[in-house]
Image 1 (tube, protein in one colour):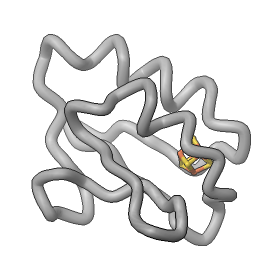
Image 2 (cartoon, protein in one colour):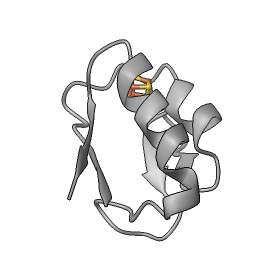
Image 3 (tube, helix red, strand yellow):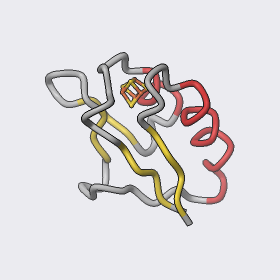
Image 4 (cartoon, helix red, strand yellow):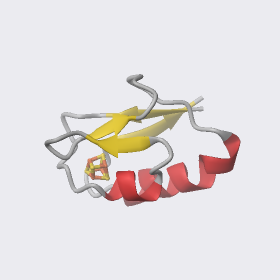
Length: 67
Ligand code: SF4
């Protein structure tokens, strides 16, 4: 499972980086950045519930889980 981030929709609220800090960090402008350096970070099974919560709560619907 991978987390897709639509940076054109992101409003840099930082919520996702708080909900899945194991996967996401913030860049200097507040956009979420994958800690593994990929465009679509892999979500480990134990983090799936947290990632789903981030998708649900993102205020601009900029996150999606694939796979
Ligand atoms: S929760 Fe959504 S709007 Fe906020 S930083 Fe993450 S992707 Fe951007």
